[in-house]
Amino acid sequence: LVLGGLLTAQSEELKARFLQRKPAVDQLKNAGIVGENNAGLLEFRNPAMRNGENDALVNAENADRQAVYADIAQRTGTTAQEVGKRRALQIAQLAAPGHWLQAADGRWYQK
Image (cartoon, rainbow, N blue to C red):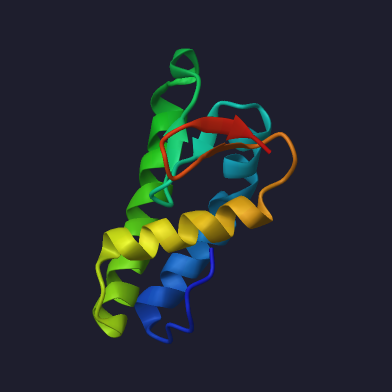
């Protein structure tokens, strides 16, 4: 996740957490368990695969993404929701083939 040039100690901690979680998040995406929704957040595609470990991972990732979106929104005079929507478009462009994505209209598709 691009942090938009944040230079605070908090942003460095966020960046470290994103990097630490990335392999596990990618594993969930590759397995089709989660997809990237149109708000720039992870969402379970396969509810049967929800468990304590997966829930904790997705919740931590989404909480950190929301913190970044809120910071960017504050600095740019927009809303965190708008930042998330813009980020979702970037994520869709960068997504690996086979990953699940949610279009702006709410429809899910595989890249």
